[in-house]
Length: 402
Image (cartoon, rainbow, N blue to C red; front, side, top):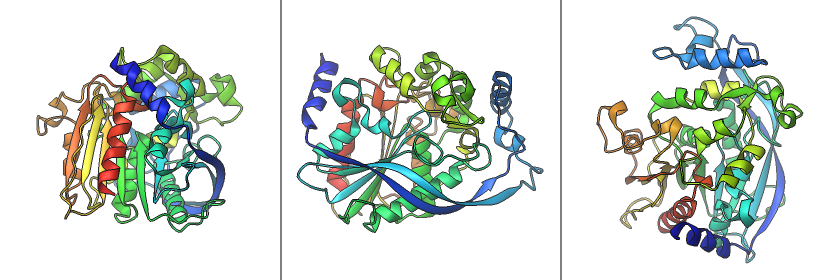
């Protein structure tokens, strides 16, 4: 009864919205790894790659980088790219704060504005109802944004550079068709998008007024579960995606891989799983190989809150504390970042109450920190029954601190 009531409440709050699709040209560069790897194009090549990189005790990324362990090869990648984005604001005009939302692996920007059930699962709707403007975008290499070489070009480094460029344009009031200049910005990420957002603050601590990281932790041991659980196949095996992506992109073969990696058992509508599978997007091999290449810590100075799946709680920092914030949200049954159980702390030798709380050590300059584990939810938080709880916690926390 609680679940259905929450969904109905979410549906009722966000009927007033104005959205427009925009294209954002960016000129960016990054220092990328050089992989000694041809784009995998067959089932055997894809499977061998993930078996190789998931081998326990082996550094999967280093194993396919050119050069020796002491002399790994890198190169500067530069280019002109176009980012596909959607800007939304409440009907009564733009909010004072712009939320920039970055999706994770397996999705495009619609993850934040999921159309299933009259947008009952839409985070964008909740943010608009709370008075915020939102900017969702297809990550570089995905969806309607520019694509590129999926091995040596589309890597987390170049994607972070794209997020930095997009942020600068938005902060300076230069988004096409959006004349408003916002007082503040907040960055939200999911999964790979959280890793990007985290990396952005590590290199540019003052670029944003707050960050919210969902589906994320600082415990890397479980990435092999994600790589193998997805049952990745070459994009050429998918009739729809094969027309849009080159060899070197991979996607789950069917809904089973999507279910394993993104949905908590018994905590989702089966129709949502069906739609999420049908509308899912692939991943570039290069980004999967570099997702772990983020800094160990961030100098971001604001308060930090982590939420992992189900019922959420929030903390309001003392009024004298910096108005910046960091908030991380993941799920109790999160596979890639918690191994399916965020409360099992064996991977960190019991050094924190849960695996999400362990991230506190990565934000040593944060003025406040809180981690919350939400029971039962899977890695794809926006697709689980708990989504309304998570959305409410995010918007309440931002409103109280930014």
